[in-house]
Each structure stands twice: as structure tokens, then as C-alpha cells.
Length: 382
Image 1 (spheres, rainbow, N blue to C red):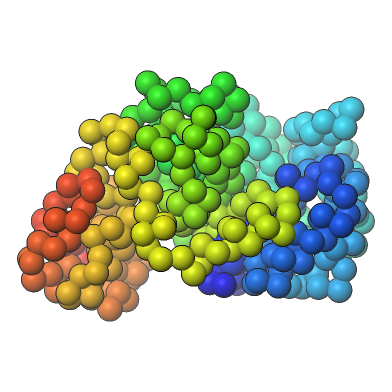
Image 2: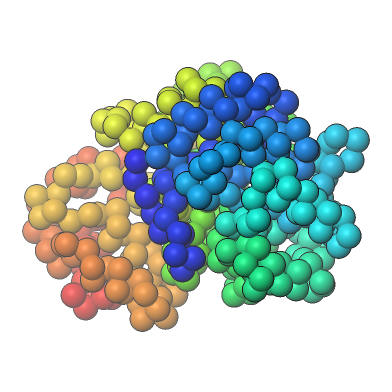
């Protein structure tokens, strides 16, 4: 397993995590089998937003004796009505469901206390301009949660969340289809109606800005909807030239700036192992570029950090240089806010480019890589 730092929280998360949603309603045997497979292979982060006692208690039982091995994302504001999950900002309700989460899991703390489902201005105001956020801060001060996170599907609202300076982690929906719809699109509604190819464009700049901002401010992203509700894996429902594989979807998520872990929705040992096999897969099995580049010519000239251009004879991590350059060009203050340091810590820099052109001949998006290497050397002065 590989691990990435969760920002400034002091925690390290496995790059593949478990989204437990699809275990809801399953037998304890299936829950335990899936969780066992995850932990045996180094997965150490799980998201539990489901408000029902049954699934929480099954997960708590399966985690017994190894609680400290797992980073739990537990949500504040996730409740249920008639056994269907709902969103609540009513503080007695919020407190009741969070207290029940602790009891059901058999623990006295949650690693990441997630501010649940903030997708609109009203959601934002109801959380950040109310007792809700003060309650979360009190939980952290008392040690009941180790860090404060938030979940969102809207890049504009997610940016506001990050800019509050309160949250230490963002859970956001990332996959190549969502990234190519306009920022004002309700992606959950969009997903339920099936993907509409004629609405898909190049990667939406608001989403790209959000990922760059998170990288710049060291706010880690844990990814939900990695497989687009399974539709990206389906030849019938995918909006692309061909269905993507789980490995390609995971690779796409993990190559976005700011991303720490791709949470995958698994409901069996087989599905968990299939996702974990990503770690030992050859590059050609991870390459998602053929499918997504067939959608729109607007991709041309834009780096999607896929590393299709490698290997570089000068050992430059071209995707990393392009990523840091994009962040710096979007916000010049990033050069002195940490991104410049990240760039300088690379083993090779833009100034090491020998202009051989091998990278440009292999780039599926016709990125002007040589120009970008020169620009990075200029911007970062290395």
C-alpha cells in the first residue's frame, strides 16, 4: 500500500480507501469480509456517512480490536427519516446521531468529523453561520474528533468551505465525467439521469481551481464517486468512447492535485481486491487518456497529469512540474506559500529539460511540454 499525508492533521491515509455506502443492508459476514480484506492489504481509511444503526453496528463489530488501525470519516448532520438518509442542521438531531455513531462503532473518538453535504449557499450558511460549526469545533477541542472535514459535490461551494480556514480535509466527488460538466451542474442529479454527452466539455476550470487551491493550502481531498456510481464502468452508460476500468478511475482521481485517497465503494472481498490491484498494475492498464480524449478537442493543450509522457531522459516528473506550474500561474502567491517548496523538492526541474521532444511525441493532448518546462524554470527560478 502507498500512503499520503492528510494535510496538517498528522495522519497518513492509504491512497485507496473504503467508501462503506454499498455495505449498507449487507450481512455482517459480507461487511466483515470486505473490511478484513481492506485492512489486510493496508487500507486504513473508511468513510461512514450512513446514519442507520444496523450498518454502523456491523462496522463497529468488524473493527473491534483494530480501531486504531483505521482512520474513520464520520459525518455530522447525516440523519435518517423512515430509514432513508437525510440531512439535518437541527442541533439536537445532529448531536443524537453523532453520539449514536460513537456508541454503534464502540469508540470514543472519530478521526475526521465531517460536516455533511454542503452543496448550496443555504447549506453553507446553515453550517458556518450557526451553532453547527461551533459544535464541531468543541468536539475537536475536547478530543472527540481529531480533525474537521467537510463533504461537497459543488466546486464553488467547496472553495468557500476551504477558504473559511476551518476545515482540514475536503471530501469531494471526482471522476473524469464530473470534471467535464459545468460547475453549476448538480452532479448527483446529472448522474441519476445518466450522463449526457452533449453537456461534456473540457475539464471545468472551477473544478481545476478547487484542486489547485487544496494542493496550495495543504487541504487533502478524499474522493467520493470515484466510479461515477458504477456508470463509468458500464459500456451501456459511460459517456466516453469505452467503459473505464476501476483502475483507470482510481488513477484519474489520484492524479488530481490535492488528492490524498480515492475512496472506492466495495461490497465484497473480490471488489476490494480488484481495487487494490491498482497498486501493482502496469502503466498501460492505468492509462485513461484514450477514452477521455475522444470526447472533445478542447482537451488539446491541457495537461491532465496522466504521465503518459514519461519516461523522461532527464528524470523530470513532468506531470508534477506541470501541476505546480498551473497552481503558480493561477495564483502567484502560491510560489511562496508552499508550492514553490514542493517544486524545489523535486529531484529534477524544468531547467533540466534537454528539449529532446520525446514527451511531446507521446502526449495525447498535444501539451507544449518544452515550453512549460521553460516557464516553470522561470516562475520558480530553479
